Image (cartoon, rainbow over all chains, first blue to last red):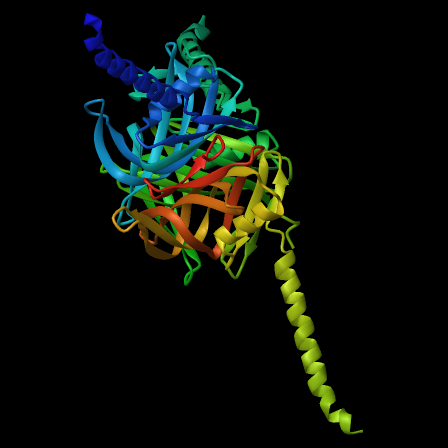
Length: 172
Length: 172
Length: 172
């Protein structure tokens, strides 16, 4: 039969997609956090985007608001707010220990709003840090303890400060 | 009538005091913390004195003892204890990110006793820090998570150490 | 009686051992932590080994897993992982403030496994830090808040990373 010559190609394609799907499933189903009495314990692995994983967690678990602390090994981009230009000046630090991370989870215009500061230390044990703009897990992991609150909290952009401020009352 | 010429002055004084009182009330009634399951979430705003607000909170809410973590944007005065002179050598850092703050609330001689350490980062992302002597919120906010304990705890000045130590048993 | 001349020596020896035993007992019975609603508050004193005290606590209180934060005054040895030699390069910092400490307690091969990062600040208020290899309390104290979880957690050495990773599922 003529169709026979397509069999190897079909087999290859079939195997390729199955493998890709399993890989995808493994990556998706990889448990990144567990429930603990005061909230959640999160463990991120090499390559994970830290802010994106916290955001995905907040959406999936419908977190009203939370505080978190963490540490690990990372590539981190910090920003320092320039009040003249009203922009964050960025700087990246590669392959550094995350000595501390402190932050809060809230909501802003229907989206998750994460505010987080960190300190990283390099191979000379010197410490750097600031406002976290972005970051991924390096060769190691990042462990984060998330204390979940029962009140939905929002952030509001305060023009005078050039900063998002967490509203304890309703944002006005 | 003779009194008529005082009317504008009276009106002005009346308006002045009313405005001042409303301003005062607004400042006083500004909600700086809310109750959450594990304790309180505090948000301090530009100009707030960090240690004084934590102290006022501890008195108002009759906090037996607590641990706290925080971060934000600050002007901070740190001290490093000089064992020869038994005094803190101070240094101030202006307009810096508060990358981390860790502390405890206890009592000493009937007064609130706060022990807190912090790390600040400057526009070059360099980290500095130490024992917090004093600090105010800069152009931004400071967010503090306060874990409240159920046991009243006291601190005692230990002469040999030149330091206040938290007593887990009764202070002797 | 001939024995009489030994009496002072016996008295001295008796006093010496009694004093030594009382000293030992005081040191052993010194309460280093108390139960609080979310876990334990630990206060370590001058000379205490930080990791060893946390380990002894985890064994004594049968802690399934925990997160902790702390600060104080310390002598600290940090390590930075060298991926070429797969070893930690160590560096010690003496008589420094512990500005922050963040860590987790888990188990590995039947033994307590502590993973902790810290930031220390020196007399010039410069910050250093990294992965804590060892540390003792300096002239002062170290205060640690330990958030205890209800799930037993294990760590597994990941060869590719050269690092111990906390397993949220069973370690495979």
